[in-house]
Length: 283
Image 1: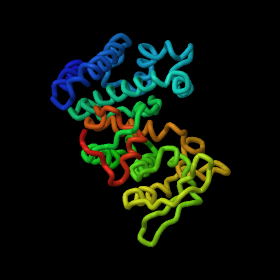
Image 2: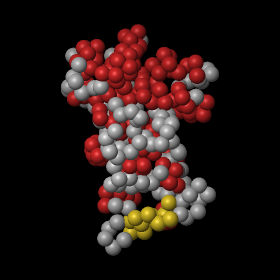
Image 3: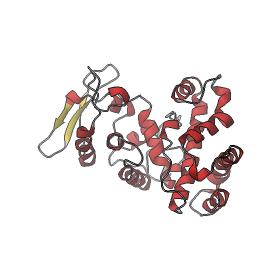
Image 4: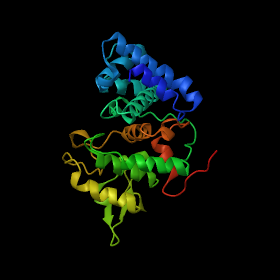
């Protein structure tokens, strides 16, 4: 199927909200396909570098002050233009959903992983809206489907997502300390959630899903740098960056239509606000 025919077939599928189609998906994906045509890139063979160049050429160059759109450029945008980052993350979700549709139709072998292009800026300026039961179920399905084809350290990502659903805030997840994990006789874990001043914090008992995710993650934990005791380890043996949980949640949500179209979008704070069982009601 031709890439533009796929766009029309997908938009006419009936699974997308009309407003989302006209305000976001059609213009964003059409822009991406136009860029591909102009640059000799077949959309079905494109990779993350092509998507990054499209974002830079068409949308972000005026905000980068001459910088390329790379990790340093993205960090610059987060600091200087957070409102632009929110729109940009939504653009990445639109393109991801297009490729989810292509994969569902057997046109590509896998959905491109575009998480490294996300800023992780929280796009919900008000009180985070809790996920409904259906949304929470969809997110649990997204966690279960997140595997090595998405990220090399997928066990770490699954743990982060389960910890957020336990009610831990993103900042608490980033600061969890290996020295304050306590396995219980029933196989669950007690943890301490440090505060902003690195005090040990209150005890928190993890549920079965999060405890299982922690147990699976520990043997695969990246070797930390000297003096680093963080539970969640990122590149170079250092703690993950503070925006990583939100980047991760946005990418997981982008793979499920019910979550990708949600307004306000699914964020790490919204997940933590939902908690284990305290799901929201339909508005």
